[in-house]
Length: 289
Image 1 (cartoon, rainbow, N blue to C red):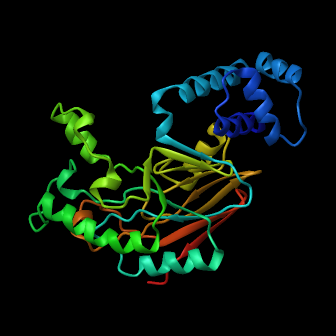
Image 2: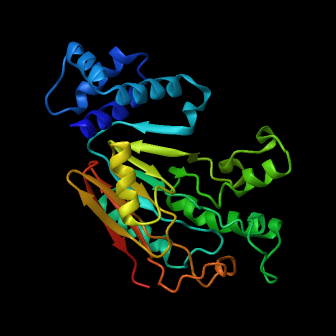
């Protein structure tokens, strides 16, 4: 039951409650057996760690960082989840695959799970000698993503570690983040919203929630919400425990690209995307290379 309480209070955050009593009232919507305010007071007393977590979420909702998350509440949404793109070295067939899956399932939302960019020249790996310059790589990425923007004009993007290299480099150089432009402005994708994570239909979307399917499920259990993650190139699928599950989407990156020579894994890349239906059903849809 503690996991159901946790998922309920996380779901309540989409309504931005102001205190524990309001948190409890909103959380009632997400529990099978509705609970009164007095029962919630008992729950806070019984589970002090849960109360501390609720207070932390309330504090977060009032802070300036709340814009880094997206909370959407509707039980009837179908969500297409696009894997890591690593533009400009995305697999040439991946866009058509994602479009076909979106149309097949009639998806209402599109989430790109991060690593939109490969940012090779901005990484902390050794540079490949034949790689384009940082400016050329950015221009190539903008051109490559233009087609994605035409097919998917409105996308929620959970920022990946490769995307964040620009912030890391700025920090290394003691450059304030206030000097940096928003991702969607630089990439000329006005309808793409870059965030740290997103919650849709009581499902959490985050770029890196674990290095294996089991780890993503463990993250789901700890957070109290089903979780969709990207980041891992060689695994895809769904791992379940009871009503909670963890999903790795697979990726859309072309392994032959110059920026991935650092990747020593011998396993084949899993080219796939995912669909989450009504916050409950999840499907991983492989691409036929």
